[in-house]
Length: 117
Image 1 (cartoon, rainbow, N blue to C red):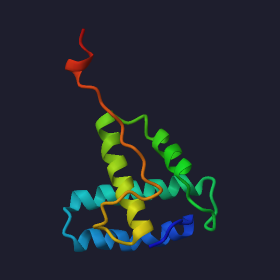
Image 2: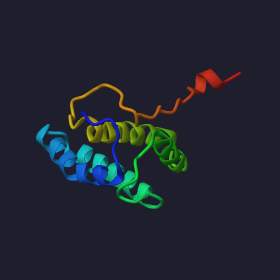
Image 3: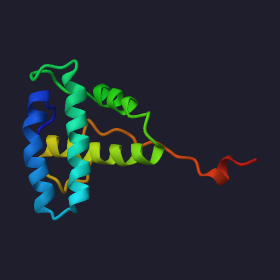
Image 4: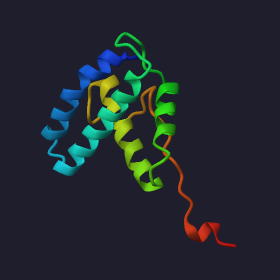
C-alpha cells in the first residue's frame, strides 16, 4: 500500500480507476460521475502542483472549498466520489473501505425541521 502519492501518480491511477469501476459493473451514470470528479480533482491540483509534488490533505480540503458553489446534495456526492478516487490511488483497491490520509469529511446538511423555530 502506498502511503503518499504525487500528482503524477494520481494521474497514472485515473485510467485504471475507471477500468476498475467498469469491472465492478457500476452503472454508466456512476462511472461518468466518478470520472468527472476524478478529472476535476486532477485539474484542480494541476493549477499549482507539478507531477512530482505530493498531494496533501490540505490540497483536498482546498478542493472541497472549490466545490462550495454547488448545491449541498451535489457537494456530498462529489466528496464521496473524491474519497473513493483518492482511496483507490493510495491503496490500489477499489473495494477498500478504510480511510486514507487524503479522506475529507463530508458536509452536514441540516434538516429543515431542525432549523425551524
